[in-house]
Image (spheres, protein in one colour):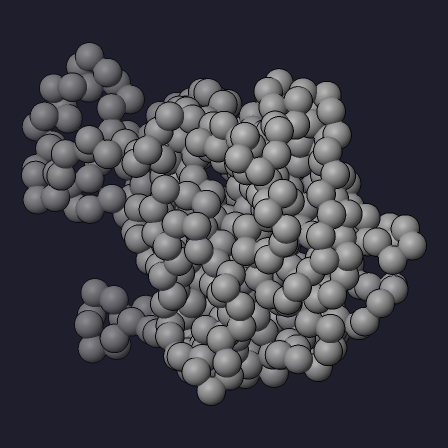
Length: 425
Ligand SMILES: [Cu+2]
């Protein structure tokens, strides 16, 4: 796979019926039947992944992409997984959450020899239960996961009606530290990452989650970063329905609007999409909805930098004093960046700069979508009188609410606009 955009769900042509998942900015791995074995082939290899337009990472992944393709199968299936190693070092695959014979567990040195460079190993096991799983190496694990090696593994229930939904989205949380101008993640980084990703994509490069009004909807994710992520969805409350340990019994599924996902955990939540709109979904750690940023920036809120700026401009004519009224001006700023990086706060919505990055997307709930139509429907058309508006009594802000025509951008105002400054996004 070379496309970074979401591929259509892979509808089953043999075996029990199920609603296939869609992988944000990804795809499902095709299989073939060989007798009663369902056969898959993963190729571990270096890949180039676009995080969002304007930045790519030189990562390791599977079958041309990081994360690797999603594996989908059915409870009771006998699966045979070929793993070919095209990396420059040995590898293995661990099938996170699966109940299987010990020797199929994929821990290099402990349960199998490492898969040498250029060789293919085979894993065979019967899927004991349905649920939400993932796969990743258990060989030079710190390096190989920091380089992007991971994938989703969904096992559908044998009973097509069991906990069935109309739309089922999956993504994996991964973090990278890639300096501006660089392409390869710093694999020894432990805390100071600058790319907080869903399926190795960042806002505004993450696909929207497109849902038809009234659809039963499931969102599943797993965390292979070095910290926890409280995933928050606006507009709804939802029920936590599945973990990598199995289904939460319906009577015990508990309500949330934010569900924390610790390192090495997976979570799924369900809701009925009965409220149309463009509903934000994001990690609630505010640094995780930013792209490349420095953490050593002083706080200039309240500082009058006018006299200082005048002095600096004698030496650096393009100098822009920023931050004395907060950092929101960075969301609207479009200035040249170093090669291969992304602005800290970016993205444009119908009302202006969205000022986000990283782990952020939009659940777009619309009336009248066909089943399995995941095309971006554009921005929500708010019914008259349902958008927050300026208070008429405030003379300074007595204008009407802004129109939500796309492209109705506010032009950023700076003390100095650098001549020839052009947006690259
Ligand atoms: Cu987070």
